[in-house]
Image (cartoon, rainbow, N blue to C red):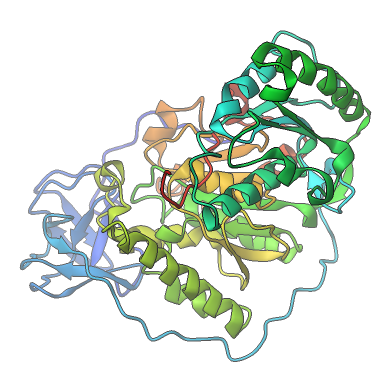
Length: 513
């Protein structure tokens, strides 16, 4: 269990800041520090010239204008002006520069690891296609915005009913897409996303619900296009008689689906069937110090047993992609990673955007100055194991080990892509505080700092802020996350599940027609 710390002692010179790497010429304030505070780093003693907020950076040496600012041992920007040792370092005196890297490509092929001598297990639902469910839902998926309200009405109609054992609920998937799309990559991506939700291992049976005349026709998901037609039914409002008649018709179908789900039992399954989505949101400067490295330890533990850990958010590997390239299992995987980064840059350029638009006001208030700094901390979620596969948004994840999925950094869109790709668990780190969840997938929340954890205890499952307080190590919290994931996979409810969070937002990439 996570330890609560209600009142932190005032910082001393020895523990006021965190120095992450010998090359770093900045350190991170462990708490809000006043001007005049003495700090000590590796024998160096300094007096702060400015007030430095919690999680923000202080210069450890004089940095001339144009000089490089280094965090995690990596370049994260240049000084706009001369910065003196002891000064606060942030957006007012740091310039963002897009870096050019000499990529270190893998020379050979990294083999898949052998199965472990002892495989941990969990209690899950064995699916016919070989995948494993950690939950057992009936899904009602809208094909378009025109059917979204009815999908919600169908799920809500079961709210007062007692569902039998092994049935986790009737989950609605409303959204604002499905019509007014340009035909091509945009509609194909939506169809891939909804198909991934309909045929997800956490879903026992599903209904695809349309209006009838939308661009995204329900026929795409039925018949020869459906891998398990006996578990999927389609309805349209126009052919079923309108909203109320469609609710009545689908309720009858769902009654049979509930009987099937009730008959399905949890069985002991190998941990290698876990597919964990990795995400962060509302990040702060502590994300790359506490929660993300701890989740990286957990990711490596999963890779060792042949499970998958799937990093998302292409916008948040920019500036750190060179670190992932040299971890790729072969040259082909490395090139595919660079292709998605280049493709995303072209996508942003069409709208006059930049990767550095990514850090939100909350990210910056939490001490993250630019996207380079944010990315260097974000990729820590993937640990240190080889990059085995790169997939596009909502594509099926088929490889064990560390996988990269091309998604935006926007949390609900990113989680939707991970879910459609087959993740049966998601772990979400947050520093500012996030309350996100998903309709059919447990989302484990890991807090990066103690004050936020204490403020949002109803939303947070694990307190990784103890690392910054010196109360736990990265390895210990990584093991804590790993063990909780197995309990959650076996049925333990997360905070987001108990609170009823059900965010679902497909990624629309094209124009509105």
